[in-house]
Image (cartoon, rainbow, N blue to C red; front, side, top):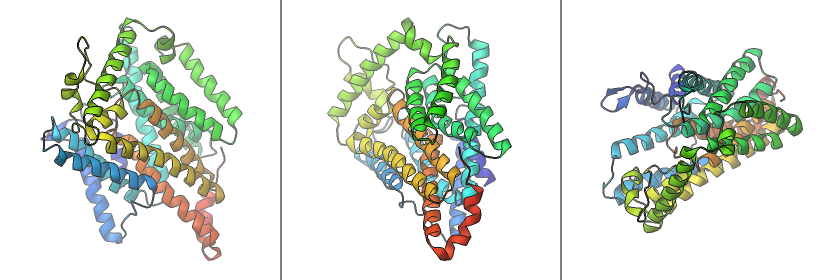
Length: 415
């Protein structure tokens, strides 16, 4: 389990000088740790003789469909891919997480610890964004990106975990947990402010609005969120709100360039609606779909357009289906947890649900389908679904109620 927690901690550090350094060919330390976790998961399955039920949840079925489209796409393209090693390195890394995460998160405590480690990872990489702002904040047009190549990508991933961290701080949990998560939340909020991602702000607003509406105390939580967010956004000249109000020349040019590239990507999709042009082929081929006088950026800056152009309509439907199924499944998990009064599990479900909604919106402004820590939340929702469903069924069975009372009481905390 320690190796698995290490993997979670270093997931957002692909560009780190140490963790992202290639050791054997293109195998980085992160990939090697992930491979070892995959072997460990297979070993656990063989020892316990219990195969994780990966297709019990709707998101598991939808992801399997997405994976099938990606794998079939390789053969349909006849191997004519620009960088098949890089492209399918992402595919198979995510596929291994599909097995590893539900296998390792076999009970409530493991799931709880994994979520804490993930929040800690986001808080840690956000410290890099804060430090970048301290050093380069006076440079024209600079936007902090933490350990990511792109500020929008960093904001998307950080905002994925911020709603869960926010609820955790408000919950009646152990003091050290709340203090730890509060520090990570503060780091992430400040870091995403310095990233100044307008798409990230829209996604974050969508997630936090959903969170506050669905919480038990929506007025209080909305007031807290508004006070914290506006205080940071208004008084920071590098905030995304400032860029909305006072876009500079670079911001305007970026908007025009994205629209041009989106149109070219849509033309690429309409030319290959069923199979696409192949994974990782958007960048080298998008120039062929620009109109005379246009100058595309080669970066899609839109997860949905890139997936549609590269894998066709089946890939787009299965990817969006995975996200929507995750949101739906988390809603069911919250209902099951509420029925057995395991309030902290309901908090996890609601926070993760808001995070996925934030990702769903922010992905419209950046390409980041391959981010492993986003898939960690999706696959963790499968484990949460299994745990909440089992607790609900056990609570309904009088002969098994005594087996679940201890677990339920431990996680029965309000927020």
